[in-house]
Image (cartoon, rainbow, N blue to C red; front, side, top):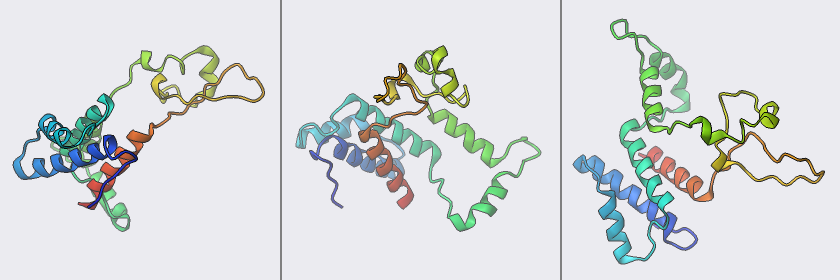
Length: 176
C-alpha cells in the first residue's frame, strides 16, 4: 500500500499511525500511540505534524476500539434496523440504544460558550433549531457582496486535514 499526502508527512503519518495502532489493538489488545509516532518521526521528519493531528489519532483509535465495525450492507439495513430496535424486557434497552450511548461517549459535547456566535440575538433566525449549533471554531467566513452586516451561517467548516483523516479512517474501518 502506498500512502502520500501533499508533503508525505503530517496526514500520511496520521494514516500510518492509525493503521499500525488498529493492527496492534487487534493483535495485542493495547496501543502505544506516543512511541509509534516517535518511531515514525525518527525515520521521517514531521510525521504527524500538528497537535490537532495527534489528538485526531487518539480520537480515531478510541472510536474504533469502542465502536468496532458498525457497517451494515444496504441490502440488510431494514432487517438489521428491525433487530436493533428490539427491546430487551429485562434491561429495557435495545442494541440501537446501546450503540447510541457508545456514540455519545466518543463524541465531544459542545458547551454553550463554544457556540457563542450562533447564540447572538442577530443570528437566532438563521438557526433552524437551537439544539443544533455550529461551534465558533468551525464557522466558515462568508464575504457578502451586498454589504450585509452579518456573515454568520449555521454551518460548520471541516478542515481539510480532518476531512482527509476522517475519510481515510472510515475507509480503513469499512474495508475490514
